[in-house]
Amino acid sequence: MNEKIRNVCVMIDYENVHYNLRNDYTNVFEKDFFNRLRMYLQGKSMNVIDIIAYCNFDLPDMYNSRHQSKLHEFGIETRHTSNTGKNCADIQIAVDTMEMIFQNNLIDGVVLISDDKDMTPLIKAIKKQKGFVHLITSQNSSDLILHTPTSHSFFEDLYEIEAKNDSHLTENIYHNLNAHIKKEYVDKQKTPPLLSLQRFTENSLSWYNIFEYEFVRLLNKLELEGKIIIHKYRLKNNEGIEYGKEFEGIITDAYLYLFNSNNPINRISNCINDEFIKNVYKKYIRNI
Image 1 (cartoon, rainbow, N blue to C red):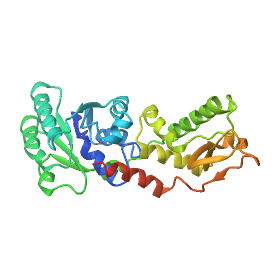
Image 2 (tube, helix red, strand yellow):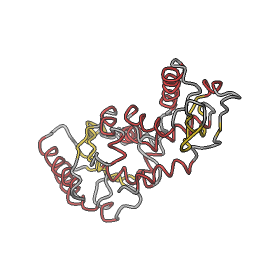
Image 3 (tube, helix red, strand yellow):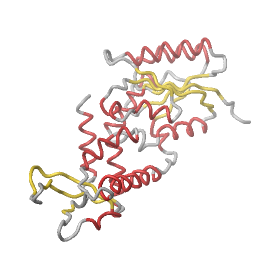
């Protein structure tokens, strides 16, 4: 006998999800979180009507990358919660959920994604009204909250589903970097191109709406494929004499020929490695 298909709304304590992933040096993009979430729930006979993420989107890594706009591209509704108190997201989730389950007869239940044991009264209220609530948590969640829902899953259950390949975004970054070098350096005869890795990264975050640590992870893939080269350089005055601090620059394999014996490239081998990426994560973890 076929299992009943339930119409559900997914309510996410997104700040909690974000912190858990970030503290493990990963993120929703690398995990392909939302595609996996939809596929997982579909496999559990749940028809997702809506997904709503509750979070303080003024967190530095989210603000710098316009993350709220990126979630909208995924079809995720967002609710910006105040940064003045710990329980702001919890309260807003509870209010919106109670309003929905009493007013929307099309909803058969709720999927709640949170580690917070304070959600226990809300879970009980959903069960009384709709009879079904599925909880998704990390493995560090309290036993108290695990015994309350109709059914339960861990994040790790989602991650068993195969993730989509991110090669299209990596190729897009490579293509746009080539186009930028041609327009701003080659066409203007400013060679060899001395493009700062830091400046390129900072300018790319809002363009791609992506976290800095995820962006450098994609650069790591391009570096391993030999499509980009990281090098050291100093600026030169009109007499061609180097001065000032040393910078890390970025160049693609397509324009490596612009460095020659008169302007040799000072390569940095395996620059954007795992330690480099972790240090970018740590910059934001310290800002909690």
